[in-house]
Length: 227
Length: 240
Image (tube, rainbow over all chains, first blue to last red; front, top):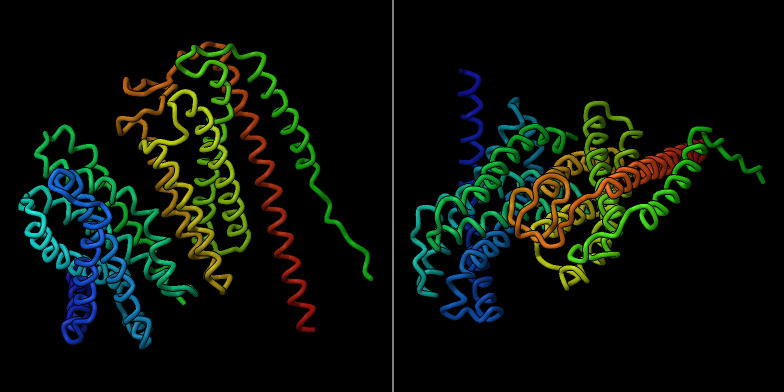
């Protein structure tokens, strides 16, 4: 039990450290938010989001926005560790390395949730859709968790490759497509208020990824960061 | 100039070469002359592509799973041999999955009236292919051989998640893709009843493709190991 408590302390300390760094520079979140807005803007012109198209496409546009904005966060959160050799310092600490992984995952999850928290009302106002839906929030929470669990692991890998930032989306999106597809489907089912019979198969897949990916990260993070 | 020394080819491998060739020829014969043609809704004569379509898909998936297992073994016991094995399996899996997708597309043209449709099965198969293409890209951009092998192993393991997903996709979602073995979705288009001769042909094709796949894998692994040896010999020569 005491061990578990130390583990949790390490995780929260990592999250606090990331948030403190972000709070002082406010670089990442600002970029993510502006980028998210721009993506929505581009979709607006690319898809000509009129009233009828909007209700069907909303969840797709929202998830594409989260996915693109998310890669910015992932790249950045690993780059700050790599730049000043901060990662080496972290690795020297006598703690379980998976705790570092989970700290990073929670940090990235928070960034994504903040982006979602900002994007949803803006999108709702711009397009006059009601996005205040408990089911949608649940899907966003689950999807963002699966996203950051996968993304943090791959970002740690991509950071050590030659073409760092370019490589991450290429590695990440094929693995994430199942998460994104089921997230888009469940979101739109919730928004359309369909019965749970339609929602469950997709929600199950989302749940499965939300469990499997962190478990794989827990197992493999150590192999990725070892020198 | 030093004489060229050819490393002897294992006898079993030579035997496999001939067996695989013979089996493939026999399978082709069975597909065209033994199996009866299917009903018109399943494409009639076009349905004959089904035997190689399924076989290629099976070998592709089996190869990706093999790559993941080899990766796992590498992580437990880091030995370059397993890394070479893993890459070889991924390359073979990519080619076979591509054959699977291409043959499916050829069949779909007359039966579904389109080369391609965004059906769950087709999407998951494409995602699987893309995942392992990304695997090759990842390997290319890492210089240190040890790290390349380690990351490759992990990515192959993560990527292998797409294999069961592809397999199950026609069973999870409503789909247009036929499920010939087991119960079919009523929305599927192009399903047919399997006659005994069809089943024989399918099983024989599966065997032929599996043997051929193993033969190719062995050749590719052997090539990789030999290349490794050459590399080491060169390093040694440069040092002395």
